[in-house]
Length: 400
Image (tube, rainbow, N blue to C red; front, top):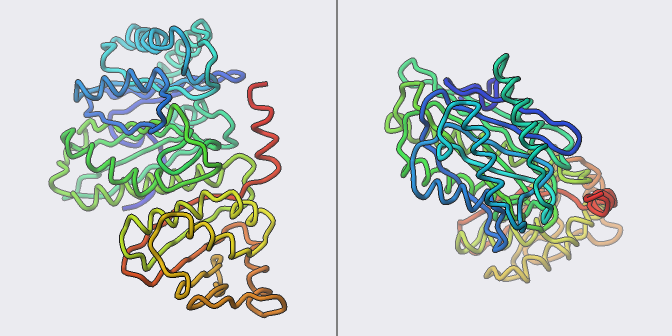
């Protein structure tokens, strides 16, 4: 497998573009032929209208031709939101000469504001006009940005018997990022031949290992959506490359999830949390998510304070089964690591070499927290960021 250029238009038979003016943008991805489609959605009980529409579409059919997404308005908790989502389908269907039910819809932005369909219609038409001239994955990625500071895209390819299989993706997300999806949209394309059942199973496994293991601020959005379309144009069947395909999709989603965390609202540091030695996978997940989502841990990281007590406290309330008297806590960066706690004994006390080393490590842009529970063989990895003054400013001013 190797990383290539092109994002969602790297796989054969896909076109895309986007247009944004002011707060409002639209991105469209089109497959030249029918593509097997599936998705994963928010676990929030308050659900945006495009999520309701797209979940129902995926439940009742296997093949799709397009994805349309708007930014600037979440189309959530509004009176005519479902009709507005369907209107987006209708406009795209008429312009691109495809069926309405072949179009998946997503939205991101402010909750509770009525959609201005005149603006949306204008943006869709502008994207259509752009797509008559060229395709641009990066334009599509830019069009769905809200508080993001940079577009997020990636593509990879691998070979099977001389044929190239490609997977591409774009994503948005910077705030309301919490394990179990986030204010994030992710659209993935691939040219492999695969059935819906296998594609759905693989996507769920991959999302659980990537997007469900990231955290910026502990909020879960109403609009979280991951779509994947597989149009079969490369001529390679999934049965020929099961492991390589899933490994490549995992890489795409993991890299996109890291990009989201690194672009977290006001974020100054990227954090990797590894909990190992857990008795069960569930225990590893509980402990790692508690650490990565702890506001006290996040603020300690922002303050460059190796406050291991906050890490231990997070594991303590996580519900994971462990014995504090044998635990190890390690802080590291890309160059070195230091034990803060070993075999349940604190080492980074005032005036110690361990504390001095830890304080230097905490100045790094990328930090690793390792907790060894020494109870078994299971582990889990989460990604997160610090929580800064800038995060408060961005979200205090968001709707204005």
